Image 1 (cartoon, rainbow, N blue to C red):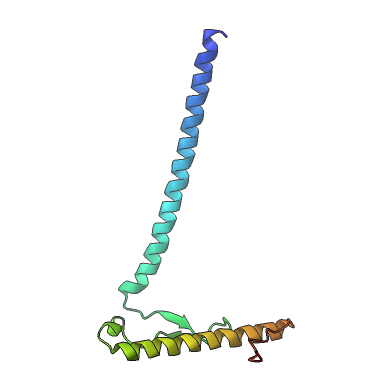
Image 2 (cartoon, one colour):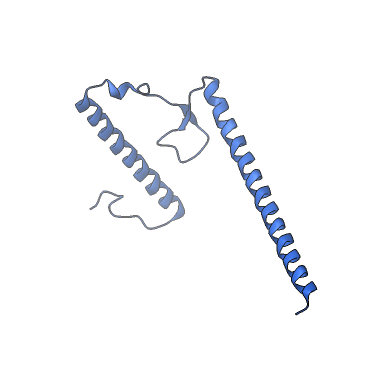
Length: 122
């Protein structure tokens, strides 16, 4: 092979590497800026002292937000362990029952078959 072929080959390899590196950097910068923008939007609500908005447990996803209620964050550290455990288990069963009720209602609305355990028959 002639000597100029090797120069062209290495030049093409270097240009291709530079283009790939530039595209990768461009993609990385755009992704980082998008992440910072999303983080800034979510942190803006924290600084204003706004309480988080949660969906109602019996809601099927419609727009009826409610304010977060319940004990203040960190109060479980100083609470009675037995009381905290019972509150945790009570909340867990309430959430499970709410999910089950939403699932039964959704399947009934779509005309799908119901699970026997969801209906309480098993």
